[in-house]
Image 1 (spheres, chains in turn brown, orange):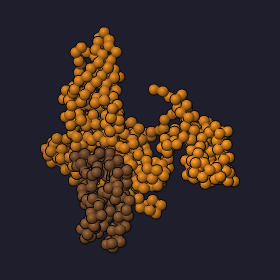
Image 2: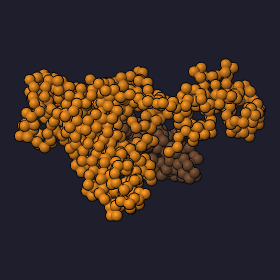
Image 3: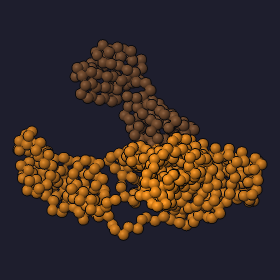
Image 4: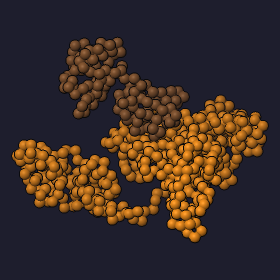
Length: 128
Length: 502
């Protein structure tokens, strides 16, 4: 499962994720990270059963923790199920079922936004 | 055994015609044999739903009071061609909005009209004795128009190349986003459901044949533009009333970095008159072969990477050089199916008849490239051959001197054999002086990744490349990577400003 961490500027400079990994022994995978002048965000992936432990520890350390849900916003009225999104997604979020209907495994999404540009019908957006 | 078109239409009228889709037909033929399938099946319906840029509509607005001969017309700020009489226009699908660019275009105007939305018309004229009015602005619905006739010069490609990108950067094309280093494959077409794939010799498809177009009933005008049936790339020109259409089957699209297109749902019912018709409709995705072409080469004749069947393309991945590459379709197979099924229901319900062509399409035709009487200039013709270079071991100070003396901002760096190994700019030199003084060597500060051109490439390619990489000069190298010149943006700018002005 994925957690979306928002980190304020003053907290940003500390190696928080390494600290939590060492303390808990849970293997955390950093999938995306972004830092700007005022704050930063990090998208991490971790085993589902460790969520509570990791979340509460990160919160204690001053990180705002949100579970990443409904990452891909999908407009079914605009979508024509062409499949332009299938091959460009690095996470293989999109696939067809046996009847060529679009299946979205949004739990795989790492918010890269590639599909937003690739969709000819502007049917996809990413939750900010 | 053969069947006549009258016989089949009689059965359609009394509701007894047996109609199947082109997807169901191959198994029926395998099971019953060709003769058996001919006895059993009367009509095979086909369908496709994909981006068809070559689409548009003739619109007649009626006369205003006082009347105006509209010379230029904009519909929701998308210009329509108005050089036809006083109150007619042709709105083309790919024309882009003057205010919203490539996010809104002619295709969106068409979709909005069909969806019942109001459109703003603006027009201007110089004014004449018979048409005194000079400007007009008004709001219109589709129902306010006297005629809205879709005429698509080139639809329903028999077959279309699949594309890949072997260059080192992502390309945004009309075939969608193509990832660098053959990261994906993009294709278009419904394969075994495609109308023309089920009648490759144009026995049943030709002028006057009714078809399902954008949700309504249309008619095949005849040979499509760019039609090239002799090498498997046939097209048809089609027409239909916009008032009968539905946004379910007519959808505007906008391709990032390319522009606007229109997705059209199109299907042709094929009467099973004889064994040959049955055999043609037994085609499977495995039998339909197309080429995977490298769009990393920005020229008309692009290298073919391999051939591939629609079955492989639809499987989701195709092997290229021992590696599985994922595929994306630009056309919608689920919607193509919907077209074929909708058409099947219409024929079964007795509300869609079949007809034979009143005029056959020339199957021997092959489209040829444009005749160009003036060759686009090549890099060789405009490059600066007196290029100053420097070697890796020389000092930054020497570089600074050469840059000043040569009145240039770029110095290609060459090795002992004269081959290009890097480039340095006045910016690199200034930076190095600030950082570490002037004691450094060229090799320490040069950029090793150099964007180059070859002397025989067209100048347009160089212009595109300068823009893509946001740079201002390109070393020109021969096939051995020897520097033979340099091309800078200023020279190119001068050439383009002289060459073509609207």
